[in-house]
Image (cartoon, rainbow, N blue to C red):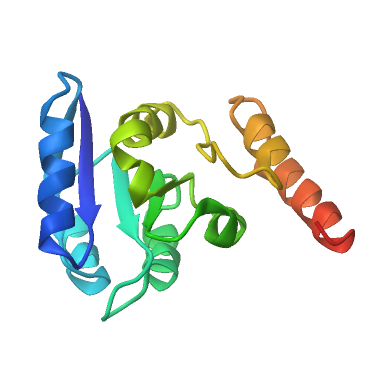
Length: 160
């Protein structure tokens, strides 16, 4: 069973995700938080296998929260969620060490797969053309994070 913590300031989004995930037999929601600070408090108290993290939140944004999560739980898979198309934030999410990115408009199609893949140690950046090579390389358990960083740096230096 994959346990998930949902971090999103909008209650309707959290409810929708809970409903979507309740239709699976291998994923359960173990906690919900309306912001980054509350989520950090919850992570001390609960156990989860994957975090779903909204980018746009009022107290701490998703990237600030991701930094805190990485500082305390470096191996915990985090999937960034946003209303913005993947090409706008996926590269930033990857650089910030997120394990995946799902646009909320595609959540009903992609979220369950993203959770399953990231729980297995894979990356999930399905629609990001610029960084698909990084995502593909990092799906193998034997690929080191530094290789992805080198490729990211190389692509950035060439204006991709």
